[in-house]
Image (cartoon, helix red, strand yellow):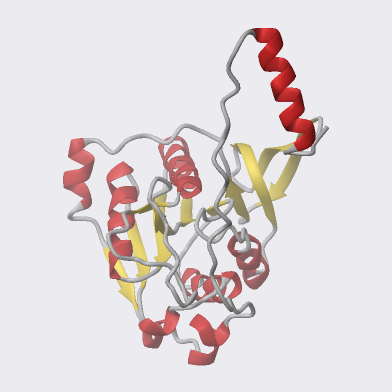
Length: 263
């Protein structure tokens, strides 16, 4: 089976994010970038399918030149090749414009299944997978925690968590599935894998090669416009209630009632 994994490079979750003084974006100086954590589950699942069913794991991302680092991470984990949509025209895309560009590139590839992370941890929009499925006219299931491919490779049975239990869904292939924590445990790249990744293909595609009009990608093709970024309000310092248990409990109740006003 040929599995395409749509992935994104995002700021490391441990990075301190600062908003620009004018609110036009974030300060990108000295930010460490990594593969989106939810995309790691998608990459790992593609590798397990390849090991069991045969075929290839193909990565695709849209982003600036630095996004190659995350593609190399996936290739070092064991993916076979990758596609990098890189053009200034792609900048400023929302979930829909991103899916539009990815869909056009994917149309040129043979595939049996498309996997995505359930959302990116930078914008948290959780829209690309669903939009991609609509643009490719494919069935899709989101937030999966288990995946089984049928023996004839024409159907997949997936599970996802719902309130009070699990939902089991059978979907025909090809399909788009979005992955989340619980589906698997992503592997670490081995030293041989890292060395091999340096020789694996990273195919660069710009707007001209993609073949889409400029008004359908990037900021021009976005349906959502971000007007301003702002930092959340700073939290007041916490208080430590000391003393004997009874005395401390009385102080705590008084603070909760008179200051916090939550009881």
